[in-house]
Image 1: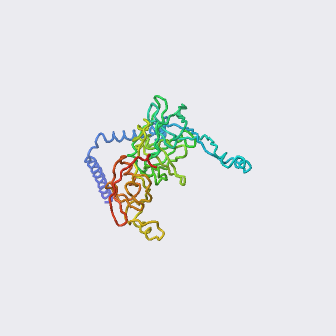
Image 2: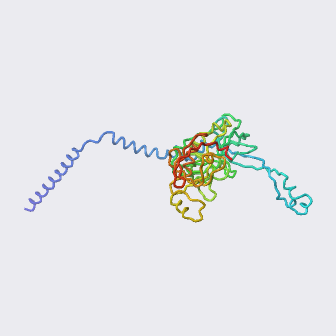
Image 3: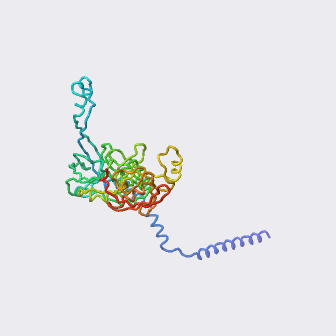
Length: 401
């Protein structure tokens, strides 16, 4: 009986095993065949990944900064300037001695002119193979002698072709041919956060490169601290130092997007560059020696929101009352200017110019700057409780007193 039970048990085990094998076979047989390219592609992808990974570093061993600088660096120049300044000096203690003054008089020696030779240094970059160089006006203005040194060591005498102090731009010409040229970009395409590469000769250290980002755009000259200019700057944290002035600010592609111009002495990591599109507007005219005429109306003004106007009007020591409206308050009307001739007064609040509402001095100045010399602009002003429109005809800024 025991053997019969054992035989029966073995038969059940064998049949179960056979059934399991058959089920596995039919299950595998029912699966769809994989496409032929799948394994090939996987293998190829694996092989590609394994074979190309070490080659990436070999193909691009340099950073984008090095590539950009190598592209533009040969076109960046050092500019050395000299100018003679005549001064009347009384600093010599010998001449200040009362014993000598009793014989020669107090003003005899103080009227003797003394000449002093001043030297300066800045940067620039070549924009034409025949030797046209862009730089800052403050680098070369009033210079008696300009010397241009290229990265390859060549030295040229430079001639200042044109200067525009209002935009702080200048063009210098050297007698060269087939010179390296910097590629100009489009500053209108620049965005906050883009890479910014400053190239120049700070403190006489030639071919210095610093890296940062574009911190903000359209920073007004008043905010920068140079209200006598008419510019909206590119702000960057790329290190800009004395001697960098006039050098290029590059994007990651090695294109010039700005001209390094100014720094804030009271802060670190804040530099400013003139957008290259502004230079493009007047570079050709400066190269021809033309004077750039800038329209103006002749007022000093400031932003005065209604709440500040209210504080002013309730102050018993306030020199004048101003309307409590949004606009730009006239602080001073300059003599012999379009504003004086048009009848503008101190305390007037300009709310519109040519139909455009204005709430800051920068907005008003921008409209004036983009008008034409001799063009009549319509100012909407608030004078006390009265609102009126005043036409004003612009004049050229160089004719201002």
